[in-house]
Image 1 (spheres, rainbow, N blue to C red):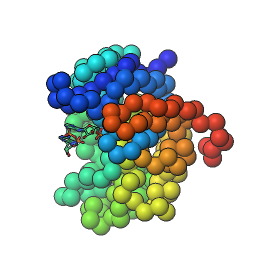
Image 2 (cartoon, rainbow, N blue to C red; image 1 turned 30 degrees about the horizontal axis):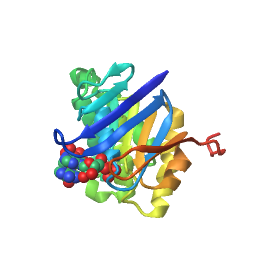
Image 3 (cartoon, rainbow, N blue to C red; image 1 turned 180 degrees about the vertical axis):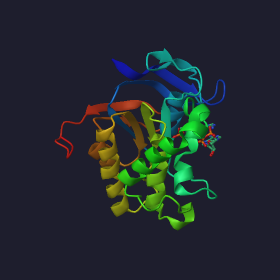
Image 4 (spheres, rainbow, N blue to C red; image 1 turned 90 degrees about the vertical axis):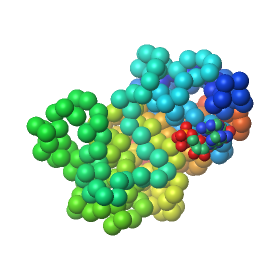
Length: 233
Ligand code: ADP
Ligand code: ADP
């Protein structure tokens, strides 16, 4: 049973303009960890926008959880290359931000604040940020900021986590640490992950299935299920 499905999707940013992606079909099962790899400009961010409902396809169909996507989705958490933490908020308050926006958290936040806060602290502890809850973003390293941004993406327990080059700005050592962190989080609380990256090694290390896209317009060239034994097996 597919959770995210693309059927022959095209997208042109301008009506009648050049296609950013062409004839893309994908099938992602619930709980699967999928990576989409390709060169810069092949349409990886475009895929993310289509899944999250920020863009509508020019041709073909996008389904998430059995329904055609018709607008922004709440079941999605996202993280990007830049952590984009709000500089005037502490780590804890940055992580809790989605709870101020997404229902049913928003309307229960006042009453349940201490419970939600405990959950945020627990999530931060899992990624090695215990003790940093009250620090501001500028007091954290780049890797720590990225850990916090992944916590922020997960705090409302999304069924789908979308990651757009989340480790691209980090040094190689920190990047590998964060790979392990992400895999640990995913094992603990299974959610579906769609990771876009230009790092094939990252894709193979993390994902169950890797899609490789061509450069402009983005097309799926290869779909490969990874059968190598990975540390989580
Ligand atoms: P990637 O994330 O793989 O680098 P993108 O999805 O950002 O690729 O871009 C795919 C193609 O769509 C590129 O040719 C890019 O120039 C174009 N594109 C991306 N965003 C826009 C936009 N807002 N308006 C017009 N063209 C865009
Ligand atoms: P994003 O979410 O990646 O910022 P948006 O849908 O907000 O994308 O579109 C604006 C972005 O798309 C800009 O940051 C711009 O750099 C990028 N972009 C890439 N290629 C193009 C293009 N050919 N025409 C217009 N914008 C483009």
